Amino acid sequence: MKNIDICLSPELIHLYDLADKNVVIVDILRATSCMVSGLAHGVTSITPFAELEACRAMKAQGYLIAGERGGEKVDGFDLGNSPFDYMDEKVKGQKIAVTTTNGTRAIDLSRSAVNVVIGAFLNISAVADYLKKQPGNAIIFCAGWKGMVNLEDSLFAAALYEKLQNDFHSDSDTLSLTHAAYQSMKHDLGGFVKNSSHAKRLGKLDIHKDIAFCMKEDEYAVVPILKGSELVSY
Ligand code: 3SL
Image (cartoon, rainbow, N blue to C red; front, side, top):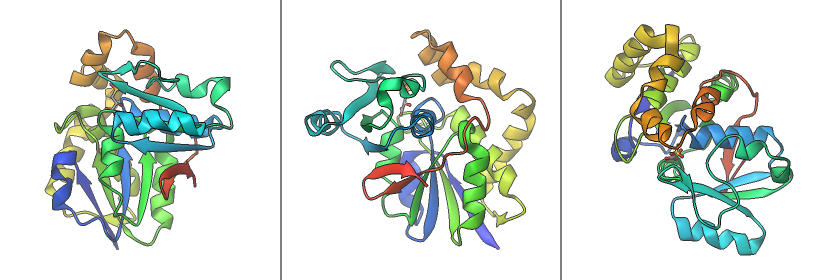
């Protein structure tokens, strides 16, 4: 049987061997939710950058540039980091370059994996089906917040694991702990995430609509995967 594991923070990823793995990157609030929304709404590709200035430079190459620092749209950028920005008519058929605090960093740290896949509640069943079809083992890599573990990414990891239990074996204590927490919160995931530390941080920016949207399951069937330097639909 294939194996599945979870990494709760970019600070821990050096402990995992990604070389023969399918890695699912998750940053529910809000980077991976934006990426899934963008590709579902006709964006041609999304190129992630860990560094702001490298992303900004892509404007000269005809890309729309997107991203946040401190949750807020970067000055001079075309899009911020709301999934609704990625649904605008102006993104259709466009290439987007994006930089975010945690999500694009996690992608950057995963480049040695066999496949890098973008997961969110918005496409959770599509990601589960994708992993079932792939021959390799899987790691769910939570972007967290500035190296810290966060609730929403951890809950997503457990929710995804629950969909994969018949196909994947796990002997990870981290996954057992995360799954136990999920069992006690799954009756009201939205309610628990509304009280999470990042939701409170974002609350100051008045984006409750984003948080509610990011917690919706299976809005889209798109599976973004990294091909070279770009995320495209599988
Ligand atoms: O850190 C990230 O990648 C972002 O998703 C953070 S925020 O939700 O835009 O604040």
